[in-house]
Picture (tube, rainbow, N blue to C red):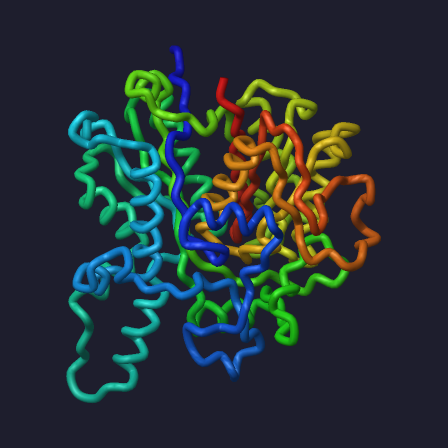
Length: 416
């Protein structure tokens, strides 16, 4: 059986660094931090009082108020990112087979804000329980894919993947496989998250997962730095238009990149902690390179999971060193979470956009906030500290790992 080639023909993003893909990318390359004091709620009593929020967000700039009221914020982010990606791809919906166009989205949590608000309202009320009739449709994670599908009349496979912080990479991989098998011609894929809420911040604080550097939010996300003390929660989303290469070529679409491989694995170790020897991380990258039919020496850039946690960062680098051997020192590595924070289930989508644009522009976004070397990290690795580096990028690898031991990697290649 011959597989179809899969390319990226459109991108969209709404992030802590900008409310469109272009602004996001320019700020990412410039090394701008998206962290600031929380404005979504009064965080004064929380151990962590900052996050990477989408700044100056007014949903009515994108979606009519009546429609927006029926959506949780994570779905609003999904629709906004998808709108930009569809426009960017130049899709004429009257000229494509809508039965073979679908939506595969990713979110680790879904409508947390909606759930939180409804339960608080119920608990504070008296008499008969009353809930918003849109409570369930707003809360469930698959509402994001459903709303996009309905808006554009996309009648192909439409669903959501949930694998914690690997969710949107899993979504992209599913879309890739559905297209290369010929089940779809086009897929809107990506992910979004809106967990900067009392429950989100309080829950991750209880896990001791978040940075508590309240005196300096903008420097709190510091992957690979010796002083890292946890991740910074982010929000937003990103969308990619995946398309059958022949279909894209026939309609004269611009092509950003080609997806040439993917990997999936599990740590099978712990519900929140990574495997101490990085076995799952090693396997997922190994499978991705094998799937792509490439060698470690072919990879120019790795966008790591790199969350800025004491346990997670070194294990991923150990896995890279084990797999890449002598080539590990030659590849550029960076964690863009140092700027965006951790978008949980939406992380893989925005980091895929970063990989795609690094291929287009020949530049590696930095890992900012590096102040002190970690003696446990090999100093020969090029972690692209503090400043972007120019480099021709032909192949980029994006890693995302999630609670539960889920690992997903995807390989992007410069279009021929």
